[in-house]
Length: 364
Ligand SMILES: [Zn+2]
Image 1 (cartoon, rainbow, N blue to C red):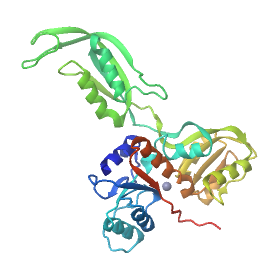
Image 2 (image 1 turned 90 degrees about the vertical axis):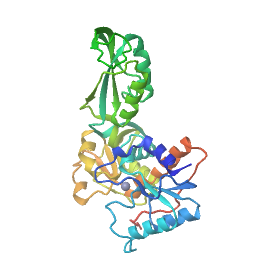
Image 3 (image 1 turned 45 degrees about the vertical axis):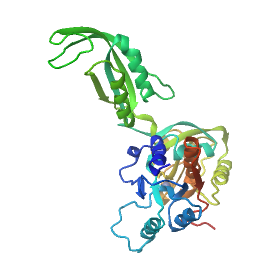
Image 4 (image 1 turned 45 degrees about the horizontal axis):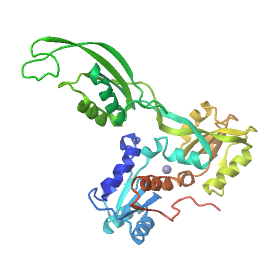
């Protein structure tokens, strides 16, 4: 099993194109072609984690936070990042980061956090735009079924929890085959009228290459006529934060105790109690306070995130309970999430979880 094969599983789930502009996801140390013995999953990759990987006989570290974030100009051991990279290189251990791309998929960091907190997921808090496109392809009637099926199999036609969604309109297509062509129907140099179906399907942008290849393979024409349309619709499954619902409303203090217990967080910070029971909850693992206005507008009674600043605790203004449950704590289950995804897809490959708590914040 090569490192590339492991990465492929992860990137089908959380494509690197979903990472934020400031981020630096992907393979940071190592070579895609190297044989992967076993992987160690962690939130942060530091020197202790590299040594742990060596002890566990893992030559691949899968981390949530990139170790190389802003770029490295030298490797002189002057700081922890340089020393970590140097150690990984010396020990022949590859490092791969899956960060904001995993934050931005509905079954990623926030899906896992919501699940651990017992929330039934409702929607992405801030869905991303510019992720959806539409394909309209003109197919002779007798071949419409085959082309549609090929498009569906390549991932087109998903709308929310529905798949195989398409719109089909029958009309007349005209064309005249030029010199040197080999038309499927009609004759060279003569206009031909054919009853065609305009098949329309919606798809996520990262599937475009596979969808167009499948369309061309299934379509009988030498020259396939099709339109690609950019949609202004937000992608319901891609974006920051998640809104979910508890099965039963909980009093605020009980909810806070529940969050502490689930996340193993001894001390959390929260805004003034609102006096309202908690049912609808917005979550964003890690630094999610930029979503506070969205959480308020969503009608959530609580927003669980981390890295909240002093004045931000004033902003809820009794509209919701803002909870800072710790950055590491709200992302800790990302380790299990990555491990489970790999084990499901490659059952023969060994994946271990780091036993180190890399939270740089200490509580007492
Ligand atoms: Zn984080």
